Amino acid sequence: MNKIMIKDDFLNKDILENIKNKIFDCHETNLFPWYLQDFKGKKGDQQIQLTHVFFNKEGVNSKYFDNLKPILEKLKIKTLLRIKANVTFKTNKKRIYGYHTDFETLGRTSIFYLHTTNGPTVFKDGQKVDCVENRMLTFPTNMLHSGSTHTDNLLRGVINFNWVKV
Image (cartoon, rainbow, N blue to C red; front, side, top):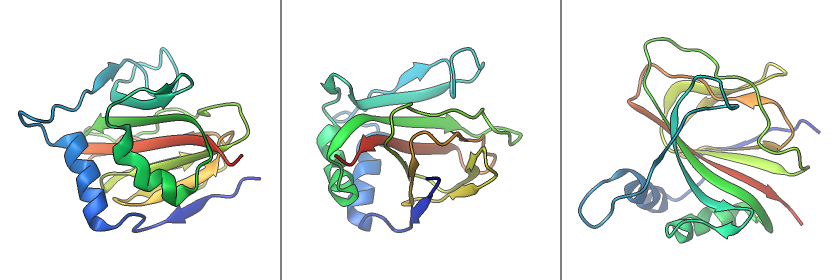
């Protein structure tokens, strides 16, 4: 099953802005923790990004987890595998990072786009989904996919949800 689903205007604008403010607005009362990851698709790929893991196999991993509850409710997620935010920065040239799967488990991957950029998500089978703010992309977890660099916006922020329906 290689069905890709796209839902634009996924969240109410107020909820979207609340999530973005928590993640990207740095001020004295909110210093969202981003962590440097020295790979993008797979270890050793010579790419860097900032990441924040909200949830992993051990459970909730972030005090900001509750901010994502409107997304979890809308996706009707029953069992989480991982939730991770990724941020990459504007580059001079567009290119694909490298195809990968997030998990080998049969489940779903959903990518929520926090910015609009010219850096799409591409699939090994040739399909491409543009990076549009407030868009939710969902596909089978075992589909080979890749993000790409972008040249237009300063940041490309996404939140990846890996989950199963049961």
